[in-house]
Length: 88
Image 1: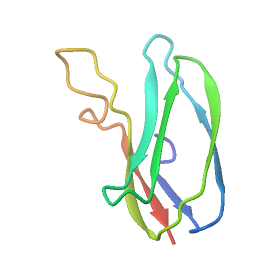
Image 2: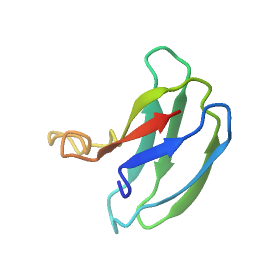
Image 3: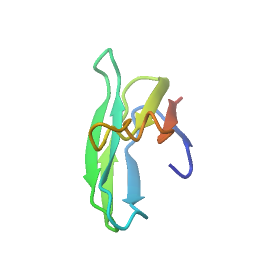
């Protein structure tokens, strides 16, 4: 992801525009808090752009990643497609 570190404020809406620069491979954008305070999952088809809006409620640092994979190969996250969302 570029950028791979995002800083946002808790309890304020976040709007992100996601663009897949891949020409054939689909991707997704996932943020999941194990505690359940934040859950975002959006597919982004190859070569497409989508906009997502979410409001983080709790401060913390959350992983951002793509879990798509072509079996039996490693997932995109395993190949380094990940980042961090920092909620202050």
